[in-house]
Length: 192
Image 1: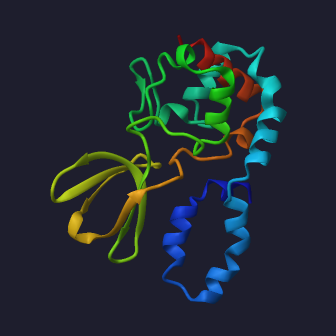
Image 2 (image 1 turned 90 degrees about the vertical axis):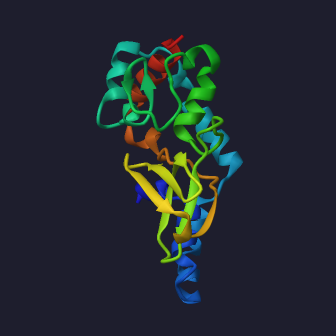
C-alpha cells in the first residue's frame, strides 16, 4: 500500500533482525521499495515542479494546520503548532520553493541540526524512533511521530543510533491533492 512508504527501513531492520532468515528474505521486496533512488526522486520533483507556483497561501495555511496534512502537529508557525520538528515561522526566507517541495516529498533527504531522528532498540527488542527531547545520565526521552514522549532507561537500551529516516512521514505528496500541495507550498513560501 502507499502507506508502506512511511515505514522506516531502520525500524523494519530492527524488528526483523530477531526473525528467521525466511522472514527476512520475504521482506527483501519491501526493502527495495523503501530504498533511496536518487534518479526516481529527482524525476518526482520535476513532475511536481509546476505546483511550486500559483498557490493560495490562505488555503495553504488551512492545509498546514488541518488534519489531512497535520503539519502543525509537529511544526510551529508563530505561536501555533507543535515543537517536534523545526520552527517554520520564517522558512520562506531561507528555503527555495524546490527545497520546500523536497522536504515535503522526501523528508529524509536532509535534516535540520538538532532534529535528526534517533533510533533506539531496547533489550526486549522494542524499536522506538523519535527526536531526542531530553537526556540525563540515566535516561533518554524521545518525542515520537505520534506526539508521545517516551522516557527510556539507559539500562534498557540495547542499541542507540542516529537514523537516516525522518519521523516526518513520507508520501504526503500522494495524500494531498495537487491543489492542496500547491497551496501548502505557497503558504510556506509566504513565511518570511
